[in-house]
Image (cartoon, rainbow over all chains, first blue to last red; front, side, top):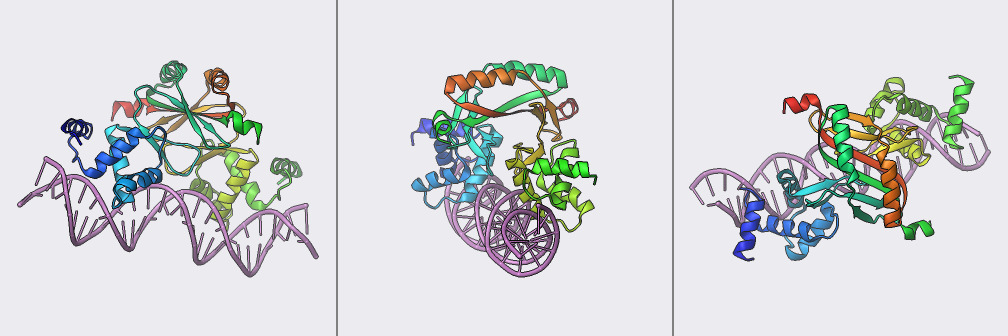
Length: 142
Length: 142
DNA sequence: CTTACTGCAAATAGTTTGCAAGAAG
DNA sequence: CTTCTTGCAAACTATTTGCAGTAAG
């Protein structure tokens, strides 16, 4: 890896040690076009570093979450999904048929956050909106 | 229990057998002012029926969910929460400090659902919106 | 009576932790 | 060198399942 890339990761990890495992996992999460769960990330990571353990994946995901590098999503399943922190707030549309997840942006949530914050006396720091339904294909053949 | 109440439950359970366990659990979910997880429901149920098992709680929650009697919520935790199906769609505001959950209604989601459905070709059947943040008390003393 | 439902114990899935060995700084 | 991180195995938590007994219809 280039010196520049290492320096960039060092910045992202803010003082935490830059290990081969953390570098790899951060790259994979950022490159992944979609939401990964721990196991999927583990499988991808082992293609490049077969000795990497699942515990390390979990520990590293916690670390990234605490550093604010990734977001944790709670879909309709038993486990969490993660994605690299997005530059713009976006939300998710989940197909109950095929499980596919589509992202979308909506300016409406900003206004809603403001309204609710005032109404309930909350300091709102984040929003997670899931719309559930059926994509065009699954809707036709139920 | 009155005949009327039993008839009402028979209707809710739509052909499934009306057992003492199901009656009790349905009552408890409906009476609970807040969102219960399986274990909390189990503890409450055992006060009245000490022999009731946790497996029955899980099996019954699945049943209720399939019958559309309850909604399943996915908060920032490892397990699900359940609440009796609400007459009006409402959403949740979660305090990251004390874990308290406040419900709110917002007409905005209706419009958003329509827009997104058209834009992405989805048939949207449900929405789950969580706002995360800090309540007035937790915000003052972080 | 027949078949669905339950309790129990054992199995499973996802995640966490203790500890000795290894690597970052 | 010192301290943080890792891999491994074992522990743990939430949930599911097999099965024989029990009860609803």
